[in-house]
Image (cartoon, rainbow over all chains, first blue to last red; front, side, top):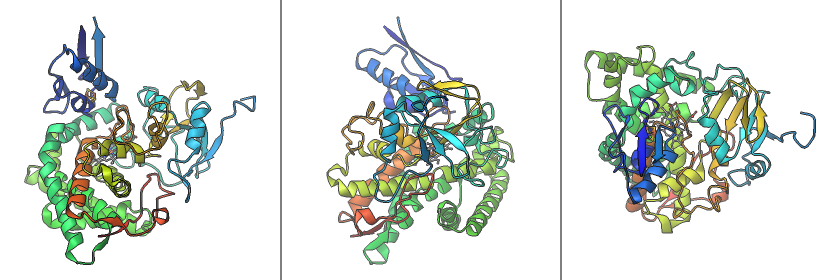
Length: 65
Length: 394
Ligand code: HEM
Ligand code: SF4
């Protein structure tokens, strides 16, 4: 199982996560990341990894439980 | 350092030269050593050049570096010029660290969300169409794609977003063009800077009294940005997104005219950003504590220049990096930097470039460069790589 967590405190709103996986991440009205789905499966796990790797402020963490 | 072998090579600041490919071949040489070189700045000082993708990304997320140009060691390319400090221009947050940077950036990110960028696509299309109409209107079937198109589009877009009324956009476009043109005389540039500043101040005062649905009105209302900072923030948005975008549009147009099989492919934008790496010398930092970069000890108080084109042409990450190949994954490129300062306008740029190429080649399918490519006036001596002019015909 992969679980995603995001740190809204460090997010700088670059939206790399939304570009990488719009089914998992969105931006709130202030432009800060919000999680749509914390438990991706299948192909979405790959997209989540791309998002975590692209996030310029390292605000996305994948926990492999 | 005691031994000759560990002495880093010393490079000139401008390694771009007429007749030499871009990025300069030295970047690959430095990557093969330990990735670092020293650069002799025109101002007389020294700084470290960082050329490997891995190191550039690691450094840009390291808390022991600073973006504040008033810090000891921050690279000053020339004695006078360089990035203004937030002390000189309040609100110039690209040159500040937390907490000021965090506050100002957070006040702006809602203006550049993916949703907002999608909403503005229609406006970008109108602006691009308007510029093409102007090019076609005189019937001469030739134009300078830099002045008539690439510089006009981003300044009209940001002017519209800020809230500059349509009647003033010509003035705004003309003044900001002088501001970002390297060959402008200092006198003229200073005058343009004063005029834009004065204009922005008037607009801010107006929006304070009569708010509209635009960025300046929202910034004024947000309470997050002080009165002294708003003009600096607006100026930063204008300048940061002007020549950068224009250089990308014009260099990209040349690349697409040479590789017409890719026109219309949605993957071209990301690969053009990586391939041209126009912000090559933009990323500068001061080191706040001793750190190790690629095995090299870098001391507190030294300066760093992180080479965008070095990282984006690193073969360890991008195979055959020197080739323009939109079918590769350009993901992970640092054309917009990395870390907390990563370009705020990047998702606007993606739309501007997509719309610009789609409209340009749809409406003028016979567009071609009107001079031998090798003779084009490339920007060899600017912080940004690009073209001064681009003669085209159709
Ligand atoms: C192709 C065009 C562009 C390129 C290559 C580019 C490149 C960059 C780079 C490399 C940085 C990082 C600077 C640093 O870390 O020191 C940056 C920051 C920035 N860019 Fe862009 N940019 C482009 C277009 C734009 C546009 C259109 C806008 C706005 C309308 C814009 C606004 C900004 C701002 C405000 C920052 C500072 C962000 C911060 O400090 O948090 N840029 N850009
Ligand atoms: S990529 Fe990172 S910084 Fe950008 S919006 Fe997503 S979480 Fe925030």
